[in-house]
Structures are given as structure tokens and as C-alpha cells.
Length: 270
Length: 263
Image 1: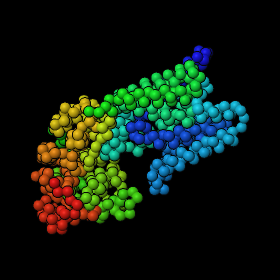
Image 2: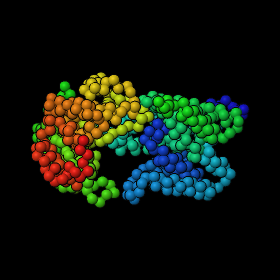
Image 3: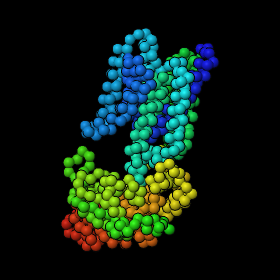
């Protein structure tokens, strides 16, 4: 096992827990509202944004946030105006943002920048600073607060958007709020697991929780617990066998998902 | 009492006359060129019980979704309770109970029945406010009325189609609507349940004077209280009046044979 100074270890553990909680809370919306392709596109847009931030020597967090939010905001109107299925627009945006990301990285000079570029791609929990932890903590608090304040609107939206609209809820407002939350969650979690893997951290814990529960309120509690636990386990695994941390977290969370599917009472026949 | 009288009275005099007014309305679905309903003019008075019949694709569902503002107009004007639906649809919808056609939830959906029914009240409860004891009591009453109390804590996806249909009707009723829009409410029900639900819808209309517009294919389940019938064909209202007369006209025009699922 790799020995680590206690401060770095504690910072990394805090980052893993906070990212696990935040991503998997948002993941409940992504999975239940079938937003996987939009979220996947947003995580790659965040990667391109962060790469642009490196190129321009701007904090990659802000450019990642701007890119992922921009993608979320233009996906709907573009597919509507162009009369294309959202999946077609998402597919094109996905490859476009990946292409842009690699072009930005290609033009980013210097070895230090290359290190940072790699951390955007694959994540680097040890590059997480105390400031990042505070930001992640604030984001987690912000998301939990919004979920508490608007739980009934989010719940109705997750059940059926048309029915929520029919009962007088402003579904467009809450739908875009969810997209915005996905965008900031992805941007804030980039440093931990990287742009290529962050989306698995969003989808896997929520999908695992949904295998066992029939009440969305319980899912909203179980998903962040599973998310935090898988992040910690993944972190421990990476220290144990010297795997990249992002990849270890995703391997653990995917394993947990497979176990959940195998033991899911929802899948039992008869 | 399901609908509180004071709630109705709070509407003001302007609302007590025409509940629904459509003038020269065309509704076109996105990506389509031809309107799903065209040049529809309709007035519905307070307390009327209207049944809408017509062949498949004649625009019955579009008519309901145009009335509650879920679909945007291409032309014309829709007013509900005297308010323009292009501007105030979200506010007005809080008072419109809507039961969609063929609603079926995913079997693994993480939503329990009493929560789904309570969701009908969310628009009325308002943003940043939590459901209170009164809301829960209304939900319980709606479940009792539909005979589904025993399903309260069960996942909705685990219920049969007919049971889910009852849940959606209970949700609409729990909304304490002033206008009830029912789109094929008997489609997933067996004969006994059809009669039972039809009786409950009638009771609601009789006791509370609830204005009701119901789309159906099922002529045998049309409640006796139905005092007016609309016949739709190719997006237009082709007959409007006494139910027996409209059915006679639809038979005469051969519409009963044009893809009509006469059960």
C-alpha cells in the first residue's frame, strides 16, 4: 500500500466522499429521467472546457462549468430548430466536444500543463486542494438544499413530466435546473475522476440503488451513501494496487452495480 | 365533500358562466403540417357533462390537451375559467384534473401510489410549500372513493393497468379540480370496474357539479348523466348535442365503422 501524509490522505478522502455524494444524488435524476446521453455529452463538454481553460491559463473549473452548461442549454433548442432527434444532436455534440478537447490539449504548452491535462482526462485526487474541498462541500450543500426545497417538484418531474406539467408545475424551469446541476456537478468532479469517467460515477450508484427500492425518497438517501462508499473503496483499491484513482472508483462502482443487478428483488421472476 | 364550494365561489362571477371557450382553434403537432384539430369552436358551461366520441385519430385527445394548454395553438383562442390559456395555462391547470390515455408506469418505477396521488396536488400546494395534513386527508379520501386504499404503499408499477387507471383518476380528483378532463378513463378496466368508475365519476358530477369532459370509445360506459355529446372526425367537431342524436348521426355518417372500437 502506498504510504501517504495524513493531510493529503484526509483531503483525498473528503474529496472522494463529497464527489461520491454529489454525483450520485444528481445521478438519481439522470437515471430516472433517462438523461444519460445528455449527461454523457455534458461530461465531455466539461472536459473540452477544462482543456480550453488550461490553454488560456484560466481556472479549468470555470471553463468546464461554462462548456457543460452551454451544451445543456443549447441541446434542446438546437434539436427543436433543426428538427432533429435530440440523440442525433447529442451524438454530434459529443464527438465535437471530444475533438475540441483534444485540440485544446494539443495546443497547451509545457510539461506541467500536460500533467494537468492528464488529470482532466483521468482525474487526480491528490491534486485536490483545500479550496477545492470547500467548493465541493458548498456544491454538495447547495444541491441538498435545492433538493429539499423543491423535492416535490423534482419528484413529480421524475415520475412523469407531462403529468407534472398538467398539474400546474413549471416543468421547464425545473428541467433546466436539473441540467444545470448536472453541469456543475460534472465540472466540480472532473479533478477527482476525470472527464472520461465522471459520468459513470453519476450513473452507477443511482442505478444500483434503484435495483432495490420502490420509493424515490429512499433512493435519494441510498444513492449518495452508495456513491460515497464506492468512492472510498475505489480510493482504497487504488492505494492498495497502485491503480489510477478514477479508474479504481469506476471499477468498484461498476462491480457494485453488477452485484445489485444480480441480487435485485425487482428482477426476480415469479 | 370533494370540492369545496368556497373554492368555486372564489372564482368570481366572470368564471361561473363559460368554463371552456374555444374559438377557431387549430392545433398542429411539432413537425406536422396538417392540424390535428382544425377550426374548432366550442363553449362548455359550468356543470356540464360532455362526452367526446369519434374514430381513432379524429383529434379527441388533441382537443383535451388543447383545452388544458399542454399543446400550443397554431390559430384561434382558448379560454378556461375566462382566462387566456396562451398566457395563464400554468395557473389555470392547477384547477384542471387530467387523466391521460393509456397511462402505464414502468414496473420498477420507484413511486408509491399515495405519493403519485399526492403529486396531483403539488401545483396547487405551490413552490416552497410542503404538503400538509389536509392534503394527505384529501389523498386518503380520493383513494377511498376509488377503492384503492389497500394499494396506498405499493409501487404503482406493480399494479395492473386497471388499478393504475384508478390511481390516475384518484390523482385527478385529489387535485380538487373545477374542470375534469378524462381521456379514455375506462380503457384498461374490466366491465365491473368500468361501471364502478363510471358511477363514481357520475357521483362526483352530481354532488359537486363538476364540469366534466370525457373522451371515450366505449359507448356502453357512457355515464347516464352525460347531457351533451361531441362527435369528432378528421380534427373537426361534426356533431354537437343530445347524446342519442349524436350517436344516430355518427351511425348515419358511417363513423361507427371507421376504425371505431365498439366494445
